[in-house]
Structure formats: C-alpha cells, structure tokens
Image (cartoon, rainbow, N blue to C red; front, side, top):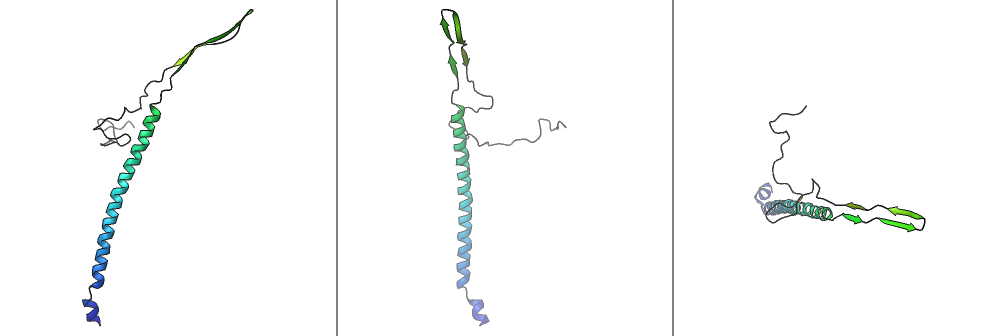
Length: 117
C-alpha cells in the first residue's frame, strides 16, 4: 500500500497545475491593479487640471443712484484677473508623463547633502 501511494502521481500534476495557475493569476492581478492605479491617478489629475483652468476673473462697473438731492447710494467698480498659480502644472502635452505621476528621483537632502538642522 505504501509503494502504491509512493508511485501515485495523479495528485502531483493537479497541485502543480494549481500552483502555476495561481502564480499567473496573482502576477496578472498585480499588473492589472498597477494599471488601474495609474489610470485613477491620471483621471484625478485631469479633474484637477480642469478645475484649475476655470477662469475666475470678473469685472463690474460702479453704479450710482442719484436723485434731486444728490447721490443716495453708490458702488465702486471692481475687477479681478485670475492668473496661473505658481503650483498649477501646465496643460498636458503628448510625449510627457501624465499629470499626477512623477517619474524620477527626488532627493531627500538639499543640494550639497547638508541638512539645515
């Protein structure tokens, strides 16, 4: 009976196939989830760029209410011109990495390697 159990390889093939299939599935899930992460970050950056590109500029002229006795009420004119913020990234262009995904190395220490403290 022990010799028959030792020579039986039917279960070995099934378990090897399961390990191989499970490995392929896990690797595929890792790659797929990485792509999902990149696309979610890119879509959120697209929304941020769309909101940032909305012009909030406005202008209005002054109004005065004048009757026979003189001016009763008035408002002064006002104007605000919305400029590009210093932290607002430029529009996306072909060939550049998508917004929100930084490709490169960011040093933890300033130039020269000296810490300010």
